[in-house]
Every structure is written in C-alpha cells, then in structure tokens.
Amino acid sequence: MTTLPEPPYFAVIFGSQRRDVDPEGYAATAARMTELAAQQPGCLGAISARGPDGFGITVSYWTSEAHIAAWREQVEHRLAREAGRARWYTHYTLEVARVERRYVWTASASPEPGGASGVAP
Image (cartoon, rainbow, N blue to C red; front, side, top):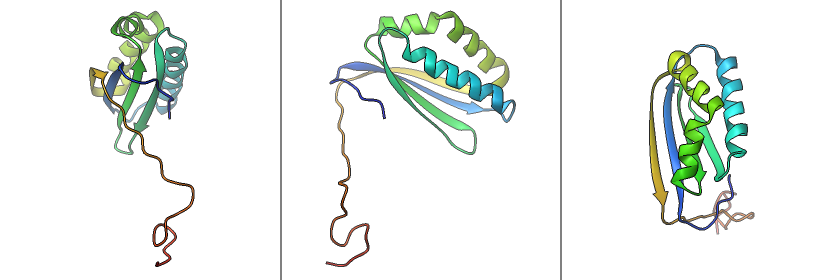
C-alpha cells in the first residue's frame, strides 16, 4: 500500500472494463504508466486491482489538481490513453476527488482468543 501524507490530497479514481485482447501489451503499458506516474511531480502513489471479468480500478494520489492536469497532458501518458481507447477498454470512468479524511486499521500480528486460530476462549 502507498504511504500517504495526512489529508488533504487528491485521488484520481479510474475504473475500466478491459477487452480480452493483447494482455501482454496491456500489462507492459500499465507497468510503464505506473513507473512514469511515480516520477511525476506531485504523485503520491497508486493502488490497483483487476478482477477475472476484466473490470479494474486504479486509484492514484496527488498533491494538487495542477499536478493531475500535468499528468493528463504528459505525452507518453496521452499516447497510452489513446491506445487504451483504441485497443484495450470497452469503457472507463475517471473521477477526481479531494480526500478530506483517512482512516487506517491494521490487524494485530497475533490472533485474538477464539479468532482466526479457531481456538475457543
């Protein structure tokens, strides 16, 4: 998981439905976009998941809307977006949100009595 600063910051939420074509080309482009985004000013990181049905979601985090706009116009990213529309996606949505609050919970390393270990109290 990406380590994020205290809010506020921005989240770009990209939901997409993949076509079942050129998985190697898509994977290479997605990996490159992840690498390239991380090099952009204002990028705080990203998380991504894709299901077996081809639906995926990526959330990238940014310090400002100006940095998001600069990423949108980055040449290699623009070319990848065009390739996605032409080859890989049936549709996608993109939302930009300002994160005002963030909560984190982490399970302890040792299970509670009667918990995951299955031992009754």
